[in-house]
Image (spheres, rainbow, N blue to C red):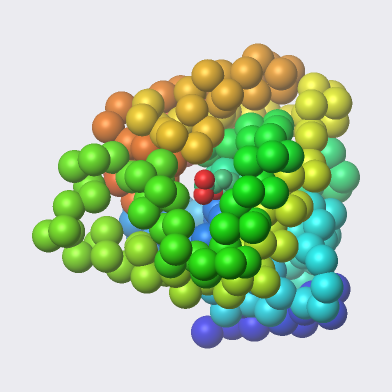
Length: 265
Ligand SMILES: O=C(O)CC1=CCC(=O)O1
């Protein structure tokens, strides 16, 4: 396991190296998950790319830090992690809130970002009332009290079978997320609107979404693709909010094809 203290918070991460001429891809995870969601994509990229995956603050084995969590905290943590490894020109692949962090990083530290792969995300996700209600429910009942509803948005019906050990495993990942990190990140999402900054991004981008996504549906991700100048848009049939888990082969092909078409760094 690898840990680094960044911005006063211990961040758990994993680096898989590659030849020095290979591009770096960094993976940012979604609300209630940690970097293990990328496993089935990462194993298909090893050797061709240097890979950095990390648990954002308050998730997985990363500390939450004292007090509130803001989107700037998440963005600054990713910037610090890339600076820690002197990784300029990274291809940043973020899912859901991880995609918001990626957009925010490209706006704040364009020197670090060569391209964006934005999975199941938006420039603004949900409404103030929706996030306030979720924070209240989790503060009262814990994550397990509302995990069924969350998992319905994450996964297709066929994946959510009692016989599917993977589905049980991801339920455990969600329910074991520290409440402080989870509700802190809900508040960070609630308070973030990237409409203005993402409309001004000048970086190659692709927006990808599972056709059955119940959290950031194709309509929202399509809007994001139209907002970011020159961004591409692609749907993945048979996946919901987490194509990296339900359709890793398809997502990896999209990632590789997108990177193949990038102008050289
Ligand atoms: O839990 C959800 O509804 C899905 C989600 C929204 C933002 C995020 O990162 O995940």
